[in-house]
Image (cartoon, rainbow, N blue to C red):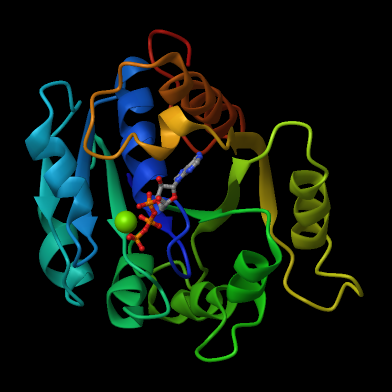
Amino acid sequence: MLIASLKPRTMGGTTNTGLLAYALARAGHPVTCYDADESLQLAAWARDVDDFPCEVHEADTPAFAETVYPEMDQTRINLVDAGHAENHPDIVDSVLEVADLAIVTISPTKPDYERLTRPERGTPLAKVIKRSGALRDSGQPPATVVLLNRCQAGASSPKRFADLLANGGEDGTEPRWNVLTTRIPRREGIASAVGFPCDKPERRAPYDALVTELTKLGHLPVTRRGV
Ligand SMILES: Nc1ncnc2c1ncn2[C@@H]1O[C@H](COP(=O)(O)OP(=O)(O)OP(=O)(O)O)[C@@H](O)[C@H]1O
Ligand SMILES: [Mg+2]
């Protein structure tokens, strides 16, 4: 299967992709990563640490569906870190053509919410995802979930933005999103995760919870470890 990690702009996407790869491997899944962001930070992370759990293939091409996807081992969980949907819509379109699940990372803040739902320029990500259905064998867009990250402990913003996303905005007229109950906290240990080993509990626990939730929702196969 292929999981696409997406975001409209810089939102913690590579952090979430890498730490999810570690968590998937801890849960017993065979994982392979693809870096479809021209900044290639996921690929650099894997190169720079000894404990990165899998290979990361450079795959920043708008021909992702035609040239990268057919070579994947579909018995593994393939995880692709896509760059800004705003700046690289061609790559994101190609990834969405073949992904089984899209995980959209955003922070529970007004600017991030607006960049996701009604950017001043460019196509809102909901529309990019919806239109991908036209290019897919099923005719439907991939299952999509929103992962809130950089959530301040005790703050009201995660619930407020989760409700706005789930309910189609203030007046219910905007697209409705499936918002995961797992939230990635705002933590220094996570802020400094990219390029470093996964050697701190805060780099593990939220992502183990994410794997558990994705499994319960039926997005991931159950492993022998029951996760
Ligand atoms: N849970 C977190 N808590 C605190 N800071 C975080 C957290 N996750 C990410 N960050 C910070 O957010 C910033 C962006 O993270 P990251 O590079 O993962 O995002 P990105 O969406 O991949 O960005 P890019 O546009 O460069 O691809 C970084 O400064 C990182 O330290
Ligand atoms: Mg990145």
